[in-house]
Length: 427
Image (cartoon, rainbow, N blue to C red; front, side, top):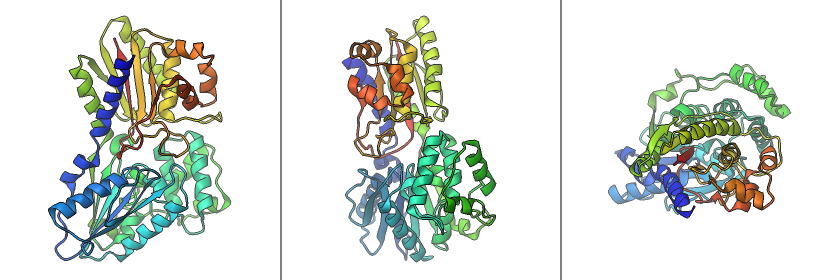
């Protein structure tokens, strides 16, 4: 089992390494402006590592000092890096906190101070929606926290959640680009969303928003989410719309991706192929309820095992968990638990499911697990310990289950975020 676990972990690490800012960001960094400053504004789980890579680049290659290079990075707690010229702020995720609010206000103030001679360089990654927290007028932090908790428990996919968030924010949905204009603005982003849609990465603070207030209201109705009174008042305001594509701020704003979920799937696929596995890639954009997707993947794996194929089934994307229990866990761990149950101790199948940012659900702490491993003997070991997998699944308590088995994936903060990577090995 140790050899299998090491190989599964290597596949996970290959996906992570493909999107580390230390190499994927550097080729995209622009030259500094002739007369102005580079103002780096970073948000999300990779904001710390992206800012550190950019700072090293501009200091080493262009010899920039504090007069030419400045900025603020707001990242998840435990994900900060030791930058010198860029202020580093660690904030709450997935539920925003006061540190995120204070940091975002500083980001917005710096954007307003930019001139046409400066270059505003926005370094964006998943998690930015929670880290860059700026309540719209009439809302407070408690309102935003209540909305976040309600949306997370609803089981809504991330694009639906972001559609609602944009209506309740002073920075999301293109509003940061408006604040920075007329300064030229370049966004370099690590994608963690299906289809790599710029409007959904960190809720699209620098790009035009194609969604509308009516779309947000439809999301709330479909997922039966009740909002605080002040938030509902904003939703009911017909003037509460985000800037459209014809807004002049977007004439000086550019956007480019530096890493995608598919990069991780391809990197893990290459390593598995080198080890002699046939590859079945299900794509990098999977969505759906974690336990249901797991059951489907178990069927694929069992069918492959019947033909004695040495096969690696890989997938990426962000699954969801509709919370009905009171346990601990996230989509990766719930997927792994449901997969283990469906495989029923199959002798030739093992798997790993993990979030490439290093944490999967949990309490928002940097030492939360990233996911979990599944082995042929997982079910037998659980029964020997008196554990009922179905009971843990019903209580959404996958962390406790795999914790007792010793099968959690615990890499710690990775410095990037290209969503989940799931690998099932057959044979």
